[in-house]
Amino acid sequence: MFSFIRDLDRARRTLLYACFYAFFCNGMVALTMGSMLPDMKAAYGLSDTAGGLMLSAHSMGNLTAGFLSGVVGVYIGRKRTVIGLSALAFVGMLLIALNGAPGLLFFAFVLTGVGRGSVTNFDNATVNALTGGSAAASNLLHAVFAVGAILAPMAFLLLRNAIGWRAGVILVALCGTASVLNLTRVTVPGDRPAPAGGKRSGGFGFMRDPGFIVLAGMMLFYLCSEYAINGWLVSYIQHKDVLRSGFGATGEALDKALATYSQAMATLLWTVILVGRLTCAWLSRRVSPKKLMLIASVCEAACFAAVLFSTTVPAATLGVAGLGFFMAGICPMIYSDAAPYTNAWPMATGILLSCGSAGAIAMPALVGALADRHGFNGGMLAILAAIVLLVLCAAVNLALARRKVCYSN
Image 1 (cartoon, rainbow, N blue to C red):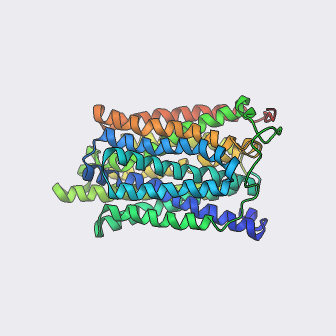
Image 2: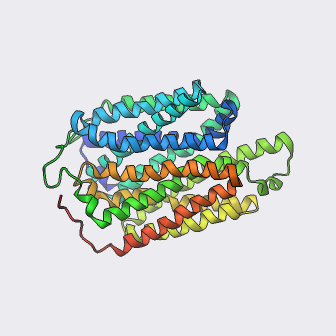
Image 3: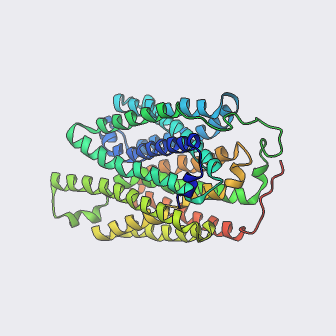
């Protein structure tokens, strides 16, 4: 499963490890957003709608990064681009911890998205190029993201209880600073691709290929669900009245139990995602990734429905565990499946990321607005609808399996 690492020379292996650590920090950023949301809303007096807008601002930054990192990288090099843009994520985290002015807070969330999106773009394109589009490598990269996502809620909860919620946010900023410094040490092959003109180096020919359009749709609906789940799971569980009787407590003790349980569910989700991604890395060498994505999408829909309609703590816990396992491999397998496009066109990864970011912008804000009007159950149903559309795209992707990629500009 790890043969792709042994096949690399020392310089390329160092670059691969730097990508892994940067993605680990991306995982910390992603889950800290949801973990800190209840405390941040309380500290700065924000409504659920405002909280959703902040999460959407993060996704707006992601969308911006999809264009910036592809275009700017052509002119100043991909290494300088990812170093400069990724640093913005951790500047944004510090601003969130230090200032609650709504305008500045919105800007800070945009910065975190720009930084995170630039790393996502750079890492996925680089790992695909280094390993020839290996599904195992892509799953391992995203497994490292899951490790950061697992540790972030636990670290946040410990620091929140010991010092305050801002301490958890500052920890992520410090870890990210180390990631930026680490990227300054690597050598990036093909650091400055030709801007256009070559048959397979420039242009947007991939946009005319139905296979790429379907993969872009899958990324759109998958990131709709992932970003909204990451951002709202903790808050949703804390507001799920039907679970309250299962804790055998009242008043402040109940609130504390729910807060601890909800953070534990965020950790459980990403612990199981880690297991799922390692499992997918193993399975993808034996089963078609297109088949795996369809199966995983159907099961993700079933497990998310179980979380929404569960009435007991054990049922909700099992639903979250199943959700994490079946979510696990979808995103890395989309990137891997798109390797014929991303390896041929410099802009393909940015467009793929931008399509996903468009959904990730809309869904957290939509969930927040619906939660204000119809309660959290109404808001979370929007995520279920996005997952159902993901299933439909995965079915079409499998149907297109025998098509050849068109390389014309």
